[in-house]
Image 1: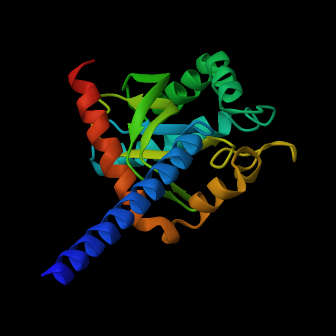
Image 2: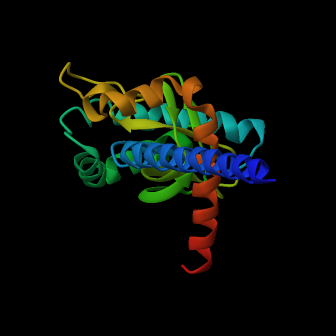
Length: 209
């Protein structure tokens, strides 16, 4: 009987140790994800609807907006610099979107703004960004009821860089955080855990906003 009690205590101790280890690992990864979110500035374009025509228009507006933004963020040193640059050039970006919509024969209104918004885990050619709240340059075409397109404008991943001095992911992220973004297959379970936690937090926060 005494031996069984010792075994039970031993198993409880092991389970407790594993639980603590997992929690420490999760919170450490979550902190890294927070740092990633604070280091990048994203682009988010919403189509008027999911019709083939509206989705095609979304991509043409994307092309015009990213062309207008070419080289715009080259001198930015961090996310806040990029936000300030985008805010100063909102009229030009708005005009580029409006002109493309009109040129394609549509009269949809379009809104270009800087927001802080929730993203699920997103996979890009250059890597994966964890779920959570990000600052973003958002373009809403018409009703904004269609599927969206997203990318990163700082560092300038989906907008052309005009100079070799433009920041890269390696410049704005620590080596550890860059590894998380560029080698997401190693962190798949933790990415999912962070997404669930961030989704719950985003939902609960919305109840009180």
